[in-house]
Amino acid sequence: MSTEAEDKQSVSSAFGRLARRPESGSFMGMIIVYLFFAALGGKVFLGAPGFSSWLNTAAEVGIIALPVGLLMIAGELDLSVGSVIPAASLTVAIVSGHYDAPEFIGILSGLGVGLFVGFVNGYLATRTAIPSLIITIGTMFGVMGLTLGFTVMIAGSTGVFIVPDPVTKALLGQFVGGMFQVTMFWWAAFIVVIYYLLHISHYGNWIYAVGGDRDSARNAGIPTRKLTIGLFMLSGFAAAFVGVSQVLTYQSAQVLTGQAFIFNSIMCVVIGGVLLTGGAGSVIGIVFGTLTFSIVNQGIFFSGLDPNIGSVIIGALLLIAVLTNDTFRQMALNYAAKKKP
Image 1 (cartoon, rainbow, N blue to C red):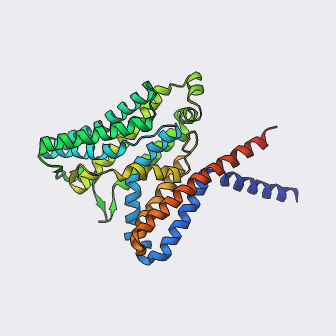
Image 2 (cartoon, rainbow, N blue to C red):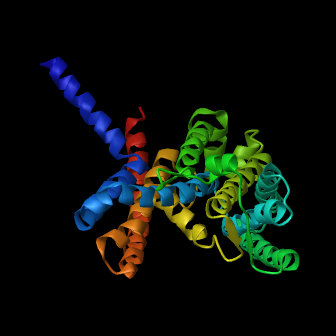
């Protein structure tokens, strides 16, 4: 009897720990949203067209949401990703399409743009007292203006075309089976790398510490400035990677693209259980949040509902996520206080 009671207590304790994790709420939300649109969308939504639609969306926004999530856990914010995407796309198109340079040079140039913008953001965020929200808004508009100006000056229009070679197309811009973007595999690679960075390597403890209390983290010997700059550069690199993938997929780049990724990535992160105040969050939660957002975003078209309903659902999910994140955090703190001797 005692063994049976201990087993039940152990199972109950395991479920309790699972329920207190922030990503538990995002997982339940994802299941509910998927079942809702599966009932409305029917076989089309449940089939390959439906899967490919929301998975393709999740892959692109998910690549950006992962490093944006790391920044938010560290107590920072990056709104410049929306301008880095078209800047990187047009850099590739101009270098390798307009000037006919080898495509690897164009790709490296595009990724370099993202790294440079990230470095500027991180440097300003660590060397000034200006909040990263304001800094990245400034760089966002600055990069947008420079992208437009240089594109018109060099190409004479706001759009540039490129025809990638078959190998480059297969690696970064291919539709597998005619429906699934190869970006999904790159998203999986980003998930593995970011998961290792946050949950396995010592950098993860640094990120949580900086988000919890930057001054205490600095006093503990954590290189907060280098860490912050590195996280901003990672965010810029991810946005540039999506821009490079887009131009090689659709074989054209436009100045006015990428703006939707700014708030979409933040919504994915918040729905995934990352606190707006920093110091808490997980990669798994961000993935669940990204999938939830993408299912709603694309499920509207398969269900036949008014597209405006999608915005209402996403807005409601965002508000619910913020409320439940605080609830889960309070549950975890209360449980930790009770466990203390």
